[in-house]
Length: 313
Image (cartoon, rainbow, N blue to C red):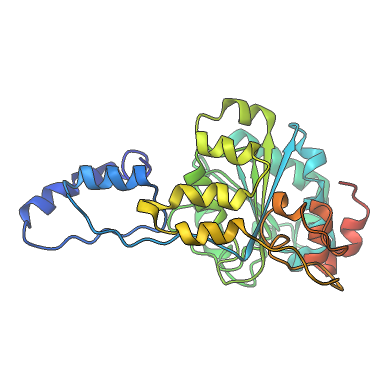
């Protein structure tokens, strides 16, 4: 389980302390857990009949957009170039998760080459003015610290960050506007934790997943593969795995019964369907619903309308 074997192996020895404090109540807290994780935690800590208080980790302010694409990031992610050229330091803050260091490096170098002088804020071509950065386990300590110090700032000059899962646990950044996944994550649990790094301050957020056909085929996590291939609500498909001991069952039923738009919206439709995910949005009958991923970007960030207008979906 992520909480133990893949995160901190020493955590699996906490039971030694629990056994020494037999009469002391034990409180276990986590932001995201499935029934399997709950069973593993209780087993390792030797806790029986634990009382569970749980709720679904829903993030209704984040729109989930899933795209099935081929492995051509130059074409699929060309909107990043346009966004940075047009917006510079006013560009939405974007976090792109890649599956490996090689992909991080390739995309970073591609963006830097495409931007040229526009890859920097101002005239100085220094690391302190760079709009684009990359973060992975093989990066030098100085670069990691610079990014970890600057990226969380509201006025950060870093507007686009390519990263592996090395950029994750313990990171608190309130104003990330868009989280992008290039390829499916290894597990739905890890994916939802990374989506949760978007729009933490409650602003409208956008989580975009490019489901590469190869990553769908090789994905071993059943829940993640079902999310990528389902035609129903992506949010419900994800959240139902967090319904620990049936907690959240009522909320799940409510999410399944989203009503259609009952009015002709003047700008972008904000009905329950259009605020949920790309699969639900298709069912909205409002003429103002976003018909494509780029149209949603246009309507969410009007200042970049000219930039996105020239790109075809």
